[in-house]
Image 1 (tube, rainbow, N blue to C red):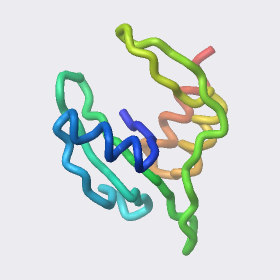
Image 2: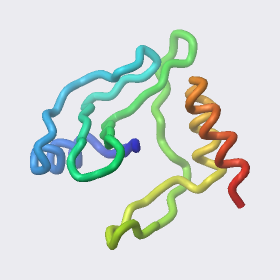
Image 3: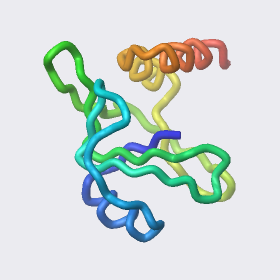
Image 4: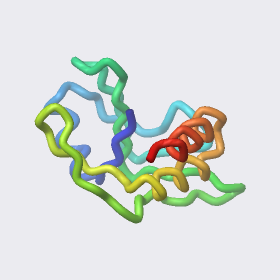
Length: 109
């Protein structure tokens, strides 16, 4: 699971849940000013990325959702991009796993 957040929010929130603030990414096509992984009580690791960018050729482009919708998960409100926005982002990432996720979203009503 990926969480995009501001640098200020990352600096405020991540240390309180025991996540060490670091720069970078696990993939050369992406970078973040702050990156951290939480493996707390969730079934999947949660990756936090502040000031997140993706590489397009020689250019670094910011990853900024154009939309957001409010969703409640286990009693907690989170905001996620609308389906079409998320599909565009995943397709732009270009990795096989992201393309597969974009295709899976297309199949969801």
